[in-house]
Image (cartoon, rainbow, N blue to C red):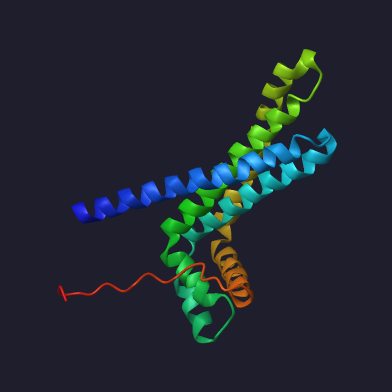
Amino acid sequence: MRRQAERLGWRAVRFALLAFVVALAVTWPAQTAVLGWPVLAAIPVLLLIILLGVAFDIVGVAATRAHETPFHARSASKRPGARKAIQLVRQADRVATLCSDVVGDIAGTLSGALAAGLALQAEPSIRGFGAILAVALVSAVTIGLKSAAKGLAIRRADTIVWLVGRVLEAIEAVLPLHILEPRPKRRRGGL
């Protein structure tokens, strides 16, 4: 039990460090690039970041809700994406943490920071209120979209996971990546 708690603790630390590094790597370049743009040109980028966070949140929720059984029949029939879908379901805790917590939360933080930064480009008389209003608006849009998306992810979990499995297989066919490695099998009996 203690060993499992230690393993979970180290995994949490690794994900926290990953989130920190990704947030640093993404936030500063995005802010410096977008804040030099006119507000109307930056709004589509802001919406794209919000939608990216929502999409990853859908994947994280679907992975935790999907069932492994339907993918075994598809895998036996050599249907594209089925093996990756099985890996997504088996590693649902990691997938949910990476998609919903790391990518989804970073996208939410980044979109709020970009909204505030864009509002600060406004006239000096409305900057403070504009920043507050922009962050509140981005928060409302993000939460509203994520609320609707989670319902979809729960209802269509198997379909979403299979689609993501197909996308992962297509990426791995083109790039030399192995996105979801199967967990190593544990030996029993102390050998």
